[in-house]
Image (tube, rainbow, N blue to C red):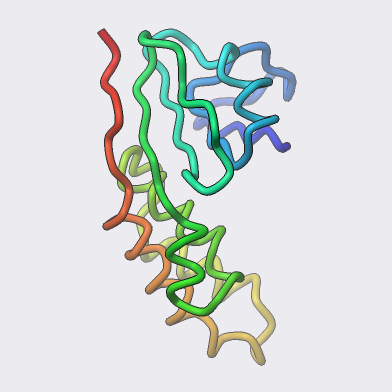
Length: 136
């Protein structure tokens, strides 16, 4: 698992005890992190690896079937971008064009041909994310 902190201000500590958003891709991660999401926070999960649904009612829950979509696209490598698309639909913290610019900057020239596939996967992730539960 990985923790990502986005802030316009200086980040004082990279260690968190609770999270605004958890993206959960398997049951062990659900078991470990469900309780660590802030009240009113967001859980996004891929339906493929989750057997026990979210038990909490004080968080917003979204499902994005990225594994199924990646299989459909015949491209396992699209998985992360599908998840990213789902996240950006719910919490648009960066614009799609900036993600694509970032890919252009960070990918070697020979991989630039993959950018349209990545863009398609992000857009597909935005389409397939569904709301499972709004917190009470």
